[in-house]
Length: 263
Image 1 (spheres, helix red, strand yellow):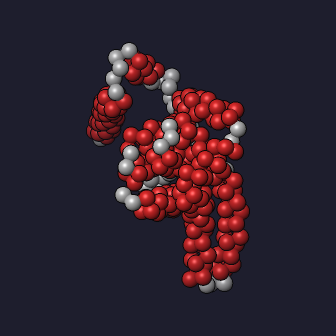
Image 2 (image 1 turned 120 degrees about the vertical axis):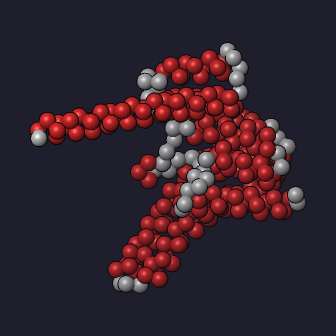
Image 3 (image 1 turned 180 degrees about the horizontal axis):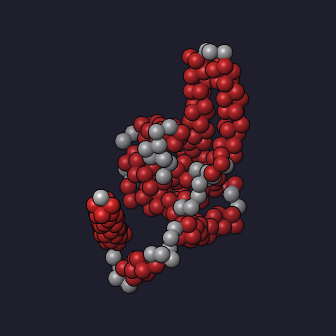
């Protein structure tokens, strides 16, 4: 695939991702899904999924609740994959470049939300005046601002290419790069810990231990463990449904017998 076409598709992917997050939420900005499309565009699925998997683990337990801004790991995945494949650098360097871009998105996200507040007020004024077409136009500006938030950093990275990457790597001190690499190894652990904190891990401790044994001692691949987990979940679901059906049936029979007795 020509480089120019790859550049355009990467930018479009970033735009579609943010519009999807603000709209119908099919991809929802998950790095694992974004990495799949980035890998198809760049022609290196393995590298893309390694980078996407790392950012996905960082993303676990992170949510922008109450309008708060969080790192854009989807954008970081796109930039990291592009840098790794186009510049031919290792995944560690790609993560070190992609992560700051994802962190930069926090500041851009705050700025966009501030600007969109003014547009929301304009839409409200138009609605109060009964100008609904004008209201819809103002409401369309908001998603476009979010798209612009993705276009700017992605375009800079894509069209300035290796020079921009080298400049960033030169500007970033060595201690910061090493710190980012260390953080990249720690954040997935923190993400998993946060996930376990909010999950009923104590209730299903047996399955948690079983998954650890399958992975650490039996060396089963993730797909195999996932299928075993799905089978166990489906079995428990059927058991619970049968219990609920039995209780409901018993309640109905009791009510019927009670009615006959009263008569």
